Amino acid sequence: MKIISFIIQKGGCGKTTTTVNTAGYLALNGYKVLCVDMDPQGNLTQHFGYDNESLDRTILNLFQKSASFEEVVLKREEFLHILPNNIDTAAAEITLQKSMSREYLLRDVLSSLNNEYDFVFIDCPPTLGLFSINALAASHEFVLIVSPEFFPMKAIKPLYETYCMVKNRLNHSLQFNGIMLTMCDFRTRHSQEVLQILKKNFPHKLYKSYIRNNVSLKEASSYGQTIFEHNPASVGAFDYQNFSEEFIRDHHKNKAKRDYYQQKFDSLSQDQQNQIMNFAQRNLSLFIKNGLEKLPENTVIREAFLIERNKVMEKIFPYRTNVLIGSSP
Image (cartoon, rainbow, N blue to C red):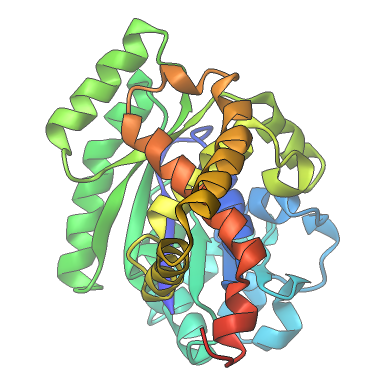
């Protein structure tokens, strides 16, 4: 079970949107995901379509040990579960601060899950207070969510200092996974300058995939849906698909799946391979018309093409049927 925090101590940078849509994509692809709403504003809970103010139990009950995990968790889909939050948690923060193990409240909750999930995603609040410290203390890794603007850039240094403190004092195994750019418009000079600064300072931590401005992402949140439920043909869905695939590229289950598709593809005749590639190209061209050719990283386009190819392969050689259920691959 991999526990990852999505974090930046600045509001409006896309933390919740990234947590929701990455979880949604992985759940669609058969990974079991738990989303933890650590922000008392409850935006993640609302994004998934729940009225957080009407909930009888939230993650606060788990911190207070007044309810069990099964009583609190919301099972939105078979592979997508949520630990909800609301403003009551903010009111209880002073009381929680007095707990003997206040930095490990979330870690203790998650430690009881016994690897029930493939991924646990934590949506952090836009502050570096108790709840963000809890998230980092419970996580194996964190992803820094940054929009290419001045104030989010200024937030990186204090967050990195907090990471070093948590790693030294509370969670020695915590790793800095990478930086994810959201709300991008690289037609502007300022966005290009921010991109170059991040490339210079974090050359091996910056994800090649990034999220462009897209109205469908905002619409999805207002409807209580992931982008893949609301508009799977949108630029937002395409971008979060690419990020999610890049995010799990080294995960052992994902590696096995990609290797399986590659072996099956290599076993086909040249004519069959060409037909599959042409079909994938037609699917990809929908997004190229939306400005994909202007993206600064050609690797994004190449990887997107491979993803589309594997979608075709999944229809021909279903991975779950041929491998996961136990028949010969």
